[in-house]
Image (tube, rainbow, N blue to C red; front, side):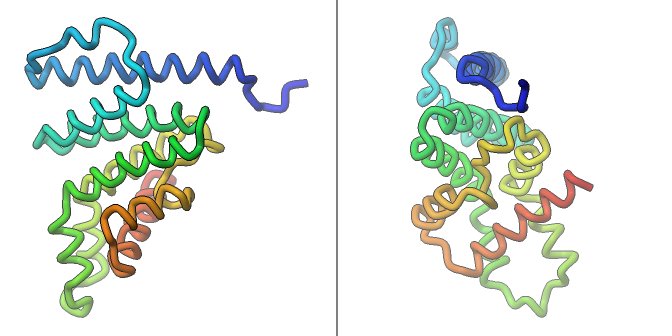
Length: 190
């Protein structure tokens, strides 16, 4: 009887394929960045190291599309880690989300500290939609491969708590990030 759940063996295979694909994407990104040491990509890289490469490469580029791409790859890697260790997976995902937030620190500060009456909801949503966090959330929620492995900002309390603690976020900024993630979900779900 097939109840739609994957066996442990199927999940291991899927996770390994995800890691292989992630490594290939990061190698290609490193090639475009004219990275000096591409030899590290010649052999399988453990998930934790691959996650750090994804974050480092994402933060090293100025092009938003490339940054988002690397960070979304980081979330895919974090999902494979989550599958074997929920605590480690939450920590891994939090590192990716943190980097997506700090990419636009000034925007989040201005939106959180600004006078709400000076900016319309439509303008606020436009500013939010221009952030790396929003783009990462859009791609993450738009391509969820395993609904039960949610490492997103909205539904994983451990992920959100680690982000809030690490960045010392106030309630206003957390509310903006939640709104941004919710807008991303609405936009990708139609």
